[in-house]
Length: 539
Image 1 (cartoon, rainbow, N blue to C red):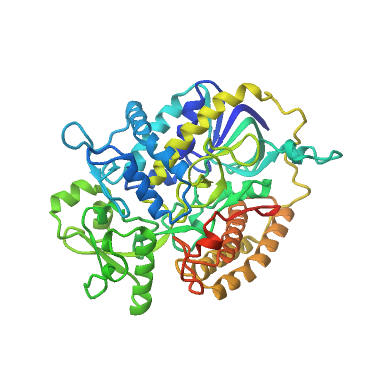
Image 2 (tube, rainbow, N blue to C red; image 1 turned 120 degrees about the vertical axis):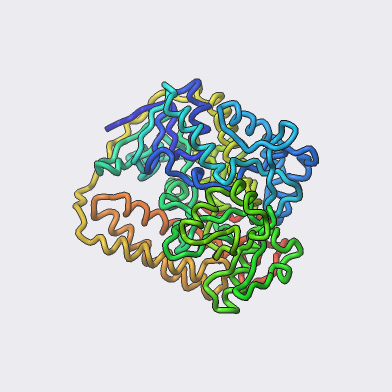
């Protein structure tokens, strides 16, 4: 089946929904999402959105904090763009109906998180993402120009280059995106979605690691599809591990917000001793990379399975009102955070790298845009400042929508060349699902062990030696059997794992989220630049 619209949006978090709403005023939109509309990483975001809203804050302070945490790789022009737009983008959310916690004098209750010099985190208790997702989803579902396709997953991007391969020489100018082949996961049918502009808003890739705060959907689909189509990918070695995920045998992917440390929570070892002063001058308010490495080292030295985050010295009514979701979830697991510390461990949380874009969200493939965690805008550099992620999605969904308004009238309504329907090439149903589950487990485990918080050349080479054969096995399997969502996700995390490993090996230094025991110092002379690669090679 063929679906045609002006714009195709892939993903339904803040980036995808925010963009869809803005472009729907002048274009028809097909929006696909892998699960339900609100089953996104945005919905799970607890802390809030960083923006200059307080009387003692200034754009210059937020810019400086972002650049400091980015450790030399954040792009100053992009940082300034995002920070200066922040308050306006927040006001738009409020005008749509989003509710944030009020403060004094008609202002907002602003929190502080690691790496921030001021209180600037606007939030809705500890469920900020869910509040933003709620209001955007309501508006998207009510908009007559937006058609939502739940349980639909991208297979491959359709490019003009691929369409014209038969019998014609393709030049660089001929490369452009025409849409995507999309799997209906409920029926198993692959449909063709054609559009004048395609936006990737598919989120992150935390599921490439064994332990992650991300939902099951976070399998790097957008990065993998863009890479296979020839787009430029950058900085995939910079994987942010959130230092404080709940450690409990029955809790899956539950994050203990960084906002707890911002409100005075302290990290303790199993003997109840503070340890962060040994690792960073900001102690418990240090940036995430420093805290995650410190916890990792403490656990390795002690042999303990976790450390503890303690906010029980704060008044109980404050804890319950400020962190109602976290309090209730911990209580369900017999942990009363008003009386005792919370067991926590680091887990893969956020990809600072992704599909390379410029200030308007454009990728290196014409008519293909990327916004949100799937992208690499230059904002985060080597490490993301807490709560800058939702801010980035807000700003670049706006930027990309403005670009679409200007560009769309110049683009053809339908491709000049016919686009073939999906062909199964004689593929059959597989009776060997164990191949998928085994490879999935193997990739996630060796990525955790060899390409995790602390790396070394020997560990990275072990990972590289294994990912090559696995990729070959998966691609062989992909062409022989009918595709399923499990197979597509496995294929995508394998591509993402390969990119992370190759980029980590290239960067022979330690900077931000990339820490290599063999190169413990930063090397500005050789590596104070982005790591860039496409399917055609290094850039």
